[in-house]
Amino acid sequence: MDLLQWLFSARIDFAGGQFLLLREVLGNVFGLLSALGGMRRKVWAWPVGIAGNLLLLTVFLGSVFGSPDSVDLLGQAGRQVMFIVTALYGWVRWRQARQEGGTAVEPRWASWGTRALLLVALVGGTAALTPLFRALGSYEPVWADAWIFMGSLLATFGMAKGWVEFWLIWVAVDVVGVPLLLSAGYYASAFMYLFYGAFTLIGFFVWWRVRRRHDADAARVMVETAHLDPTVREE
Image (tube, rainbow, N blue to C red; front, side, top):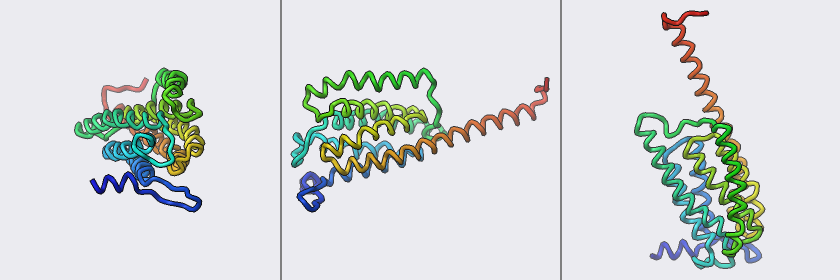
């Protein structure tokens, strides 16, 4: 109990009365570690991410958990719950793939139809959630909060499915998230979003390279098989 009380009250103070909640810092550190594990396709990325989500949930519902001088970001809080649910799905999916003797996930490109659906879901979901979040009292501009929520949902689901494009959805989330969090006073999260923006671009190119290497290996195997198979004849 003493540890929990310390965790909920601990903060890092700065000159001028500014401070950062330790929970916010730790939650973002766990999030960064989870992103690093995801880039390396490690199963442990999911439970580490869940730990960070639980911490950040208490931060973005400041009025519920007694955080001083904080505003509620319902989209940010709601996405932590969504992260936990989706992470459980990704955790199970990656573990099953690992137990079957393969890698946790094999990066692949989404189809053009899937890409169109992701774009429609991002824009349409943002439009649908904005009035709901506004009615619940979320911080303005509410559309940005809704955009971050929908983008995070789609990106996390895309990571579980192994779509390379999920990294680009994170970039779109970060572009909107940085100014929103700065205006709301969540400076640690804003800094991490800025860092994530660069990190997710790196992750995109890492997964792209893995996919390209896989395609090249598959093409080489096909050529070698055709060359060694006596039933294969050149036209």
